Length: 479
Ligand code: BG6
Image (tube, rainbow, N blue to C red):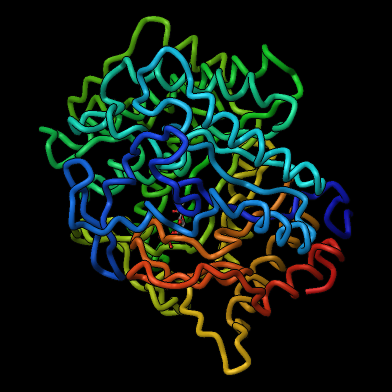
């Protein structure tokens, strides 16, 4: 039995361009769907505005200004011993409107410089092509990925960056948390995942499947392109994996949990296996959904199966048979049947804390697909207050990460899961996706920036910085 993690294990951290770069209109960048999202809070959803409106506050415009500070930030990641760094390429730095024929050289140059900086320290870039960052221009009608032509725009963008960076970036992912849009009760998830406002659609669920079909086709085309260009490249999918537990051993709860899990597996089933699963086709027929597909789509999906599954794990969810509830206000991976799990505590933002669920997720995914897995997000959003000595003593974050890493190691050593790496979310403090807050912090590195945009932007090491440094140096032995 393998007693520890492989020496090649990719320890690192994860971020997304729009949550840390700032410089939202610099270097020729165009506005993305996130640039028209206002701030929110726990229980208060962010609003989508019609374009960038004077007098509104958009937290992602400034973020932590990584655009100008990436050199000092990368030096801190290197000090922690990072083997890899997951970020995204902001689509609108490369194609500001999304439909141009030629890319923006200043945007391409920025990522060349960033990747060179990472590689200087031996840090491997892990790149998401679309992390909630589609061009606003392609989304402003509220139809986004419902339009088939967006497939071509995205594939053109992906081809440009994969060709350009193929010798600097080996690991790619297509769409971040593509399954978040399964929550069609609120416009936030459809907006960021595919530029679609579900509230404007006659049947939100049918619209969601249509937009997602186009993304599956685009993803498969990108996988195939990358493989043909350079066989060293590995392209994965990326899903938010919040497993559903049955509330009780009542057969109705068991059945419900199984069906709820299909909302998770649907996405990986198509992208890993290259075809639609039978339960989805039956469901569409029963509901009378007519998802438009081109004749060649089945062959495209079959020829573009991903190499690995990247997934985020923050929490589990528990479902109980009964009345379905609206999840319009939900800021997590709830189902309309989710109830509180009496055995699990929650964070200040109501996200359950369930380390064992990570082992369960890893084993479930690996047993179903037998492809390599990559935990590309996991972490604890918490309020950090610098103490009198000026430092953040975030033992609560260390406790959370330690418990999850322990379960992750069990999944590898006891369950035999093929795991590529672990990149905790928000390794440097940044803007929260669901709430737009700075105060929901995840980082090992504190950034002096606050919800109203104030702060010096200064970076400092939290206690978890030193702890994670030792975790990486010992390959997970010293926790
Ligand atoms: C995932 C996203 O949903 O979780 C990230 O991929 C996001 O973009 C992260 O930031 C944590 O969510 P939040 O809302 O706490 O920032």
